[in-house]
Amino acid sequence: MGYQKMRREFINGLNEHFSGMKELIRKSLEARKFAYCPYSNFRVRAALLKHTQTGCCRGENACFNLGICAERTAISKAISEGYRGFKAIATASTSPCGGCRQFMRLGANWDVYLSKPDGSYVEMSVEELLLASFGPEDLK
Picture 1 (cartoon, one colour):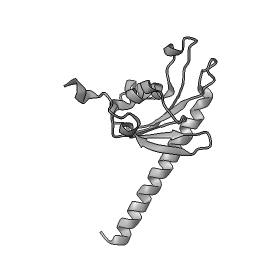
Picture 2: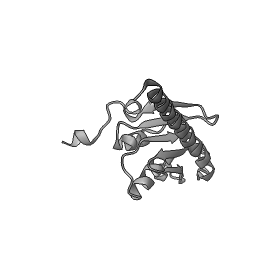
Picture 3: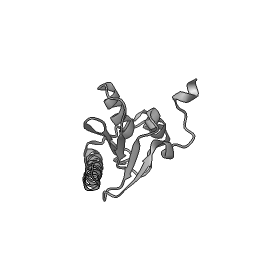
Picture 4: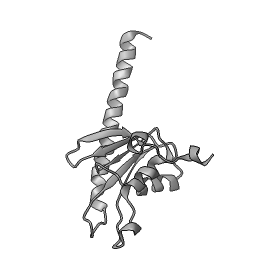
């Protein structure tokens, strides 16, 4: 394969990756309108990259610890539909709670995009987000 063709394929792959990530972040921002959070008014939302994208939002109860975060909702929904091997999650929050960080530990090698309402974001891995986490290898 010639250099120019390899370069073109590499650039096309990067363009697809970045447009996919922007779409994932856009979906996470869109999902906030469905959040039910009358107590905290903290509209967190998340979109998960799997074979198709899923947008989920926060569900809240007056007893805060009975609510469920957007990140856990998105992951649980995808798992219940049979999906595994996630590639990335975008959450319209700059700091997921500790429970969500641990829940994301289903795999340490996927990307987490932490975004702000203006669309700017920070990319991290689950491993970076949750240092010294508890995972399947700890059960052996």
